[in-house]
Image 1 (tube, one colour):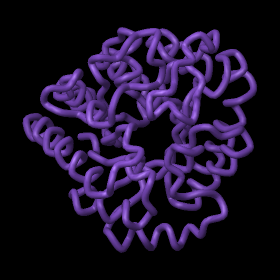
Image 2 (image 1 turned 180 degrees about the horizontal axis):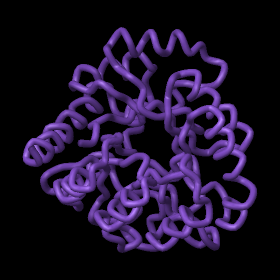
Image 3 (image 1 turned 180 degrees about the vertical axis):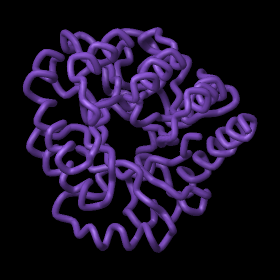
Image 4 (image 1 turned 90 degrees about the vertical axis):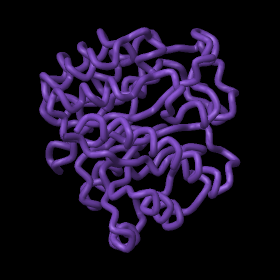
Length: 286
C-alpha cells in the first residue's frame, strides 16, 4: 500500500517548524521538503545544518519523504542531491528544465549518475512545457506561446523518457493535473510506470475545472480548487485505487499551489478538509 504523505509547499509563507507542526497536527508522519526558487517553497537549502532540520522533524515525529528542487541550475541540483543524501532522503523531484533533447543528453545524466552514487533516486515530474514565472501562482502565467518544443508532459513523452534513460535511479513523479491538461488517463500512466518500476512519487492534487487550455498555462486555479475534494475535477478514489492495485508502496502526497497570502489558520483549514476527503477515499480501499 502507498504511504499517504504531505507537501510542505502550501506553507511556503511560513517557517519550517511551524509548517511541520501544522502538518503533524493533521496526522501526517512524512513530509516532502522543498528547496526551490521563490515564490515556491524553500524551507531547506544546501548550507543548512541537516542535524537541525532533522531535529525539528523528529520533534514532531515526522520523517522527510522527498526533496523538491524546481527552478535550479544543474550545479544547484547536484548540490541538492548531496543535500538529500545528508538528510537521509532517497528521492529528489524536479521537472524537465530544458528542451527534451538537451534535457536527456546533457542536463539529466550527471544528476542520475550522482544520485546512483549517493543512493538518491531522480524523479522527473510530468510537467507542461510552459516557462516558469514568479507570478504564476497568482494567475500571471500566460506564457503558452513560449512553450519549449518538447518536454515531459504527455504519456508518450513519459514513455520516451524512461526508454531513453533506462536507469534504475531515474523515474517519474506523477502529477495528475498536468496529465488532465494533456487529456491523458491518470490510471494508465500509473500502470505503465509501475510495471517498469519507474513510478517514484505521486501527487494527490486537483485542478480547477474552469482551467482554460492553451490559455492558463501553469495557473491551475485558486488553491482551494487545487486541493482534492468531493466536488473536484478528479475523482481521486480512482487513481488511488490504481496505486493500490499495482502494488505501489511509495509516497502519495497531498499538494496544491495557490496559497500565497493565506493565513496560517486558513492554509491548515483547507488542508484539513482535503485531508478528510482523501482519507475517506483511502478508507474505502481497505
